[in-house]
Amino acid sequence: MVQKVAVIGAGVCGLISIKACLDEGLEPTCFESSHEIGGLWRFKEEPEPGRANIYQSVVINSSKEMMSLSDFPAPAELPNNMHHSEVLLYLRLYAQAFRLLQHIHFKTSVVSVRQTPDFAATGRWEVETERRDGRRQTAVFDAVMVCSGHFTKPHLPLRDFPGIESFKGRYFHSWDYRNAEGLQGKRVVVIGIGNSGGDIAVDISRVAEKVFLSTRSGAWVISRLGQGGLPADLVGTSRVDAMMQKLFPSWINRMVEKKMDEAFDHRLYGLKPKHGFFAQIPLVNDELPARIISGRVQVKPNVKEFCGSRVVLVDGSIIDKVDIVVFSTGYNYSFPFLPSALQAKRGDKLRLYKHVFPPALTKPTLAVVGFIQSFGAINPLAEMQARWVTRVFKGLTTLPSEETMMKEIEKDTAAIHQRYTCVRKCNPHQVNYIPYLDSLAEQVGVKPNILWLLLTDPRLALQVLLGPCTSYQYRLTGPGQWAGARQAILTQWERVHQPFRTRVVPEPETRPSSRRSIIVIVSGAALLCSFFSPLAFFRPPQ
Image (cartoon, rainbow, N blue to C red; front, side):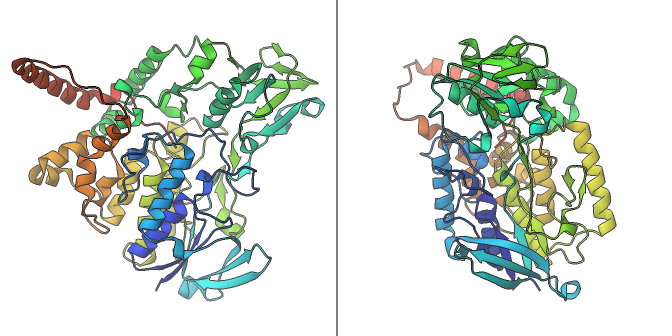
């Protein structure tokens, strides 16, 4: 019987996993190589090898309601799209509220995870750790949850850029970037148009002489601001929206692309990609179009080669006198502490059932949490994974046979390649947000019963069906039910509005009869917008 669980990493996924273990009566021991929680969201003044790093200006792409954990809404006073320091504050509050810190061993790295000699019978693991002072220790655990992230090993494909050895300036990966200090008056080329590339190009353009943003494929660019200045990811992210996208994928894609081009013409700005909007994670950036129209950032095609301080592009044009090159070229994932047999891949894809369990294990006592990406916040996805994992560990939920799991992995891989443009920067573990959440929620027994809600609580049912699919929906019933879930859903828009109330502007006075007419008209329009919100927007990624 599983009781003692090793959790590797104390970032978001590690904290979620510790709590999931405690909720199921398990005994988690978390090993964190740094001195503090937070993982990716803990800003470091100096890059720390083997750990995720962020730059000083990072603001989270998902709004606080979409990224909040299912039984811990972010405080109303926090901004909707939080600075990294505020995300870390939220995680600290979460850890304190559920008393997670006492289960974490800081400054302790995991060196290896290997099966015990009696694994076939017990499913146990030997976990070897090393402290900062070099002391090593081995302990036996009934199960392991891997939460070490996948933004720790920069992908720097220098072989794809002939002549880089002749470049007279300085080049580095976006992992090394902190801020624009020292780049004043420089001519900078940023290679890669993912979220980091876009952010860094904008950040540097405030002080540089000129920034050139080089892209192989282009990107759809969206803002964090939606209709009326509200968070964009709260519109078009309901269960009805997901249903319409499934029924009318081509039409929805055309409507969304049309909406994108109404903000600014992607073709005119040199950004329009060949792929459709939903085929690849878009670039979330509020400022890039303004930097392009002001000439501070110039969009360029892919780099062909380097010649001294000159950068030659694939269209034959040349950028002269380049001082700095920033490679925003993604990351390689690595779990060096795991046995090689558990790292079997199909192409670039790690073989994991539902992106969590290695299918070949005779005992399902090791799981990977958070190794996914989607058109949505990572936190609710990882939390649902952790809740499912701990129930599998306890034997409350069973996995299918290895053969069945392998067939589903193959099927899922084929679907990913068909639906998404799987270029180098795309994490191969791509999931469809609401369907993936619901599929795991069914395993856990917490998927909302919409029909029952319509019969018993129509007000709540309409919010669950037509409102943004926030994580609180998965605490309404079943294992881990939270008494505050209903109220959290009904008050989520209050928490959205609260940070704006720094200067309250009074409503204009209207005659009573006019006010009643306005309420009726606005209510009717809101209902229509709820049904047709896929035309408005979608959910930006974390």
